[in-house]
Length: 360
Image 1 (cartoon, rainbow, N blue to C red):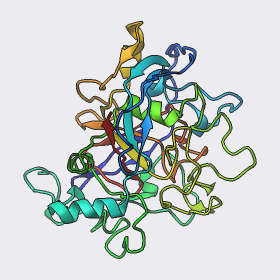
Image 2: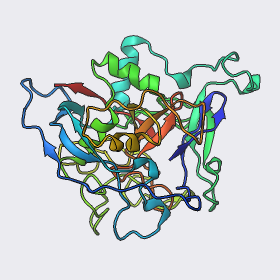
Image 3: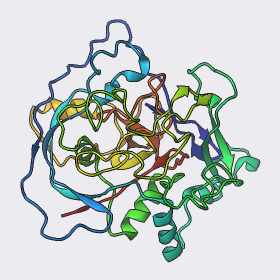
């Protein structure tokens, strides 16, 4: 799950470990995955540039605890991703990769748009924040030099003044030469603004998961049930000892350019790992249980009407999907396809981006 802590108006986004069940709490009922049934209708128009066709159809959405993985804390399905429930989505076009720095720069050049991380926070919006802390910036992964306990994400997240999409790690960093890297440090409204300019929109959570599964039924990952199977790394994730030593065994210590790993069955790249992706749904941990309780197939669900996160009441959260280069079985393995993340809507981070969709 994602947790936030306000710093100069920006909520630091970081993965946290699964909570233990209180004594006497009953486990959520887990349903079986049923066969994915794809729509047969195909679009009449050619594929828009950089997009692939997702046929839509009916599928089982959500996650179960992966088999044969024991109690390793990172390799469990979080409670908010259960129970598995049946969903139908219409077909749509989806960006084959995450939106890149090059694409976002074209948007900014055409519109003059200024992202949230580049704007100086206003004192009237943050009356409890000291004036000297009202400085534009965003959250940056800052690994410690030594092993640390994993119950305090401030050990590896910091608010970096001057961090933005142009300077993902702070003012001394740059995206020069990284045109094909995913744009990061984008808040929800930034992703929304780009998608509208591009004549697209953000995917719903259901659309995103249908697409990520690539036509497979109930698999742990977009490619199957085993992570690497002794072969090449299938996604950009964290290798080594989290959070102090990323070995970069997958050839990318940190974020990678898009499309460096094999695509899934629909031709989509990086649906697991690399950077988290905003989707349009508000976040509520009980939303899946509400859908399952109806006993019917949810058709094109748009998410709950509003946001509520008991661990961070009062902070409006939208759903993140897909995990990032910081995901690891030692702590948070949200590259598992049915699992969920969340983030406060004004928050960006250097492992958070997005991709877009458009109707048929």
